[in-house]
Image (cartoon, rainbow, N blue to C red):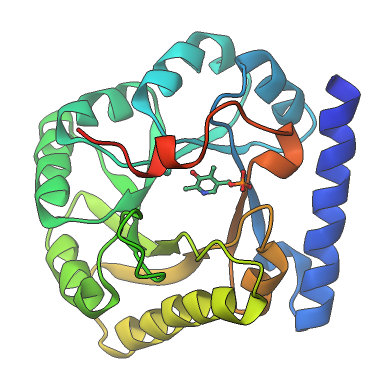
Length: 243
Ligand SMILES: *Cc1c(COP(=O)(O)O)cnc(C)c1O
């Protein structure tokens, strides 16, 4: 079990290295984030103890369940799932340092209010729906600049870049289009020089499409299945949560 994870991590690392080489990018421009949904704290620890310390959950419930088991092993926690406003205080309680899935003004406002009252700040990425699929969360590309402007007004929210889940397709060029949309948006936002906005990070690419994402400029690739092997639930359980 443990050997499987380490072996898989080596393979992923190799894929990232090769993709960077091919794209003429330096390997240290791309961080590997482990998407740990359904993975036990014990298995996550195997990765953490071997230097893979950037992890992310989709559900607050799982974050909570694994917190005790992971809190003494150094790591960096991001959040990549649909965030309900009534779960904001948990996100802060369980040491999430970056919400990658900020996709609407009311969430930004509530997050800001809570952070103010706790005297904290948090990193955020604006999640964009680049595939046009209704099942996916994220702001529509045409509304992304406006949302970025709004979020930038909240002093506790440190915008670091953009995040997207690309189209699920075996057709690489269709997937690439999604990543290009995110990259173009990044450039557009940079050109507008909005105060309190950094646009360094592009979180895109997963187990199946990380090479394409790296070619298009990803700085964070989010990998789950390829490291921890098959999951029990279908993706729709995580991406189309009805509240
Ligand atoms: C599960 C998940 C990933 C990782 O997907 P895999 O195909 O398992 O690599 C990346 N991003 C988000 C938002 C996810 O929910």
